[in-house]
Length: 173
Image 1 (cartoon, helix red, strand yellow):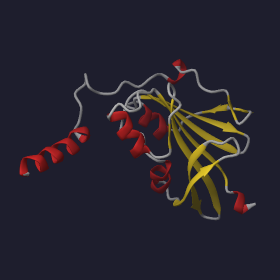
Image 2 (image 1 turned 180 degrees about the vertical axis):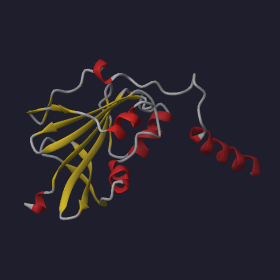
Image 3 (image 1 turned 90 degrees about the horizontal axis):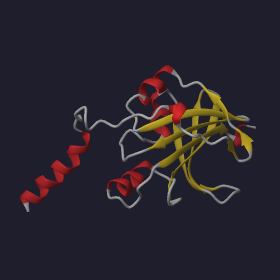
């Protein structure tokens, strides 16, 4: 039993160890990606990545782009392999001073399942929705952890689109 426990510990730590140059994920150039052009029938207008987003994307296995769609901001990531670098927006928002409260899964007016939360900072708040979609099978994940396990265990083979939609909180209007 002790050997099994140590095997579990080693298996849990291995994905967190630094990779050799040959094992590191290869970022995809954003200009080489055929990004979506609309979201909910609204044209997507490309936005420049912030300096920290651009730095983060350098080692990201895929590519990251930001768009405006009316009063919404949409972050789209294409992901080519299982990675712990695909994490919930709540992590980034909390790191920049937002108070984030999960509001549970929601189904939008188009029948799409999303994880949902409210992010507050000062007197402004945003509704945040997230989902990960396997581009080949259309399998949907509403949290990075279940997606990661499905990808690692090859139950979902990708590539994937990871969508994050930030919009003014309707409760603030």
